[in-house]
Length: 209
Length: 405
View 1 (cartoon, rainbow over the protein chains, first blue to last red):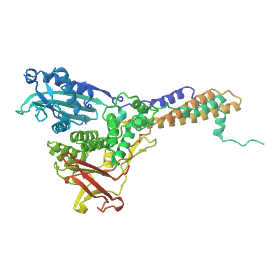
View 2: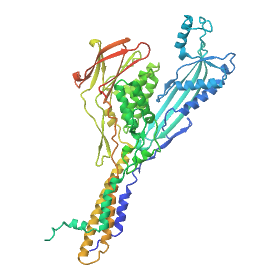
View 3: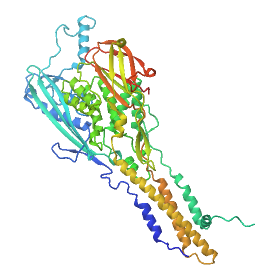
View 4: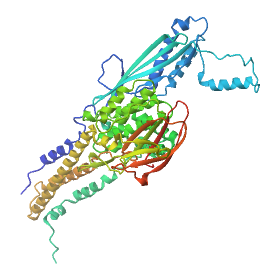
């Protein structure tokens, strides 16, 4: 008796063997969706990611331009003295906060052409020790060390990072508001304030969901 | 003497043509030839020879060990390395695509851990930020930890770490903010299990404690395609810090349980993919069995016809075709990798605790006791502690672990 199969069954079996190859079937966006930067007012499909170097650069560039435009700086008879106060991080992203103020200071110093000066309060202890050495005659002094010459602040510059985050099965979204303000040291008035917003969202590869 | 009669099926196999037999033999040896090229190795600080895909895993393990041995700068470096990857979104990744494919195991992807593992990386980094006098960055870590726990299948278990919520509120209170919302959320999460103390912004000593052994990942299912967790029941159920010869007793109850967190996440998208891989593996194996059986029968038919002096009538070619198909099916089935990724951060604790108190600056000594279910001190686990409270505004952050490494 000859068997009834010649070519049909092998093809059927091949189809059965290969039919299950698509393991990602039924999974939406198995390769994930790349992170896209969006306008904050743009409605996204969800989620995002953290504070990155390009955000810091964009924000500090914008803040530096904004500060230089205010009359308290641009029309000051003598360059006002500014002290930087630490930025407060109120987001879910741990960041090196000093980098914001450092870049803002370097931008202002390089673009303001002397219209603003910064007081180095980080070095206060070192400066005081040096002054004491001069006063005690242990080191030379080019001016009278008993005269107080440490500058007082005309303005305090500080900032705050605030964030809102969303996470759903469709992805992750993060909105960060970067706000900076300049406060008059004498009157406590906020003489300048500006902000920048960045919203990001993305969806990870299915292998990580 | 007549040769011993061979079983019918064997006669069928023996009747297979020589080319087919050679093909079968060659095919059986082929699967072992599939060797992957060497994986790129990561040049991580002090982690020579660690595959790039396991970089986060090794960094996390080393960070926990460093934290427990007082190497805080080492712990920070390793956690920062791990969080640089954990904090991003992985898209269009070749390793991930490979892990989703039929013929590569899930553990070929970059390790980012399960949510409870990612949470712990942020938790530990938060402790270290606080220790460095950066409560806002510590709070950011606690928030990110809670964020990583979001998206559980059952909404009740989404972002449900009591301690992370409590610490977020405490950090906010320390920063002159309003931490009451976070405290209220923490109390809701704690439910009736225990009463969380009010925030004490004036506290200058923060004690983080951990005890028990964390969950263990195991692969279950016919092909190991199901990720499951084994939860141990360690004797340490609670702890307390006894200072000043018993005059100060600081309770350290378990606020969070990583075993509970690991088992309440619900399914992953990857579980769906692994399930399909398992179905494919089973189906190809079954189809191969059918093909091989058909091949044997066809060969037997061909052999019988030959004995009767007749032509094979196509049976021999059918036997060859089915045999090849059967072998192919077996190879494909055995090459299909459905097993779940069980790489794990294996030196995690089970229970997390915290206390805040005010102590005068200077040296303090006492003992740390771990308590059993009935609240009795486990003598073998009790250890002496000495702590130095720093003067000034910065909080003194202490970390105690029952785990040694």
